[in-house]
Length: 196
Image (tube, rainbow, N blue to C red):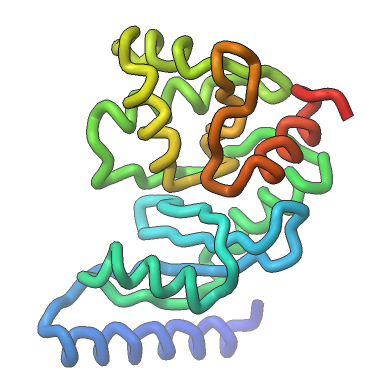
């Protein structure tokens, strides 16, 4: 990317941040977002703070995704950005089966301790393997908390990167998934955890 393009983008971001501060009397760190529209599981919205990736979300379109970001992060400017190109490339490698693991810095601020523990345990489920809600609950320190674990996974803000799709019911059925069961089955087949 040329210096002039980068300078132009920085200037545009500064304009958004100044306008946000004037309109809201708040100064918040911008939340950067980008879209991936042609994935095998549909449209994905991505968002990151300066600390790391905050969201990978299944969505219908950009407008819907931005509405959800504004509802959740109305205290900061929301800026479309190329800052997420590294994450987009990592997801493209994943979908092209070139690299099924992720080395992406995450920002899980704002989550409860329990949700963070559940996501940390879930992130350790290897590619091509699955775990049950009961196993994740036990490893997260709450052996009787299968329902709470399921709720924490449903709230997973970084789908695919933290592979909540690898968590199944004890009977081996898929359970639920924020991106839909078709997407969950696709991801498990893609990783070799389910037969074709």
